[in-house]
Image (cartoon, rainbow, N blue to C red):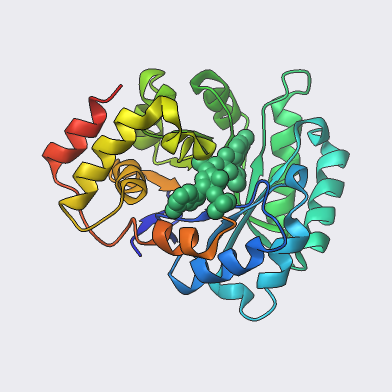
Length: 265
Ligand SMILES: NC(=O)c1ccc[n+]([C@@H]2O[C@H](COP(=O)([O-])OP(=O)(O)OC[C@H]3O[C@@H](n4cnc5c(N)ncnc54)[C@H](OP(=O)(O)O)[C@@H]3O)[C@@H](O)[C@H]2O)c1
């Protein structure tokens, strides 16, 4: 596994973590396989209702796993957020969340109220780091301005070979300059990367991967994390998939190959 610094925290997280949206009960074995392969960063959310499943893999060595969860956009009022965090802590069976993220912005609630609650959770020791998700460049800047005692360390957004909006909107560049980690969600396009419509791209990814003895999926994930400030969180119910995804790291794609994938879209 390769690691990158989370924001400016000095703390390292794996470049390949694991998502848990639509994780099934059998997916617990996939989480275990991923952890054994070095992907000890798990992303969940109160909205996914998978925090209780994640809890089952935390029983043995909680401290070796980086846990990220999210508060839903309807819970961004101060008191609602504090209660949501307590529920997540209970569901996960832990005392502190490593990264607590605002799942989606909610423009009907002042961001200053939400961030004050997030900072309170940090001061109380219930949360270690604050992140956001699905925040546009403008929303991210406004959220940063609302911070008083902590910093935003990450923005989780959709980013993959077939979804380049973070590059086109300037968000990726801004996050790199501010040292805000981009957490790439749906890094396999929720599975669409190997669909019929993306057949040509998938075949090209396979051809590039074969130069390194790697698969098309591993090429797609390696390309993402080669961007330097990016950690990807593919979701797998299948343990073989989780192992394959972890193997997307620990090797370096050439600049020429990165450029070739850049040019696919
Ligand atoms: N912040 C947000 O608003 C937001 C939104 C969407 C997602 N997310 C996060 O991002 C995570 C990942 O995104 P996602 O779940 O949308 O989709 P994804 O990770 O892009 O794709 C998941 C699909 O790819 C398959 N897959 C995974 N590894 C594979 C491999 N090595 N070979 C072949 N197929 C493979 C999975 O199959 P199996 O399950 O059968 O293994 C599943 O069908 C989510 O779980 C969630 O944590 C966040």
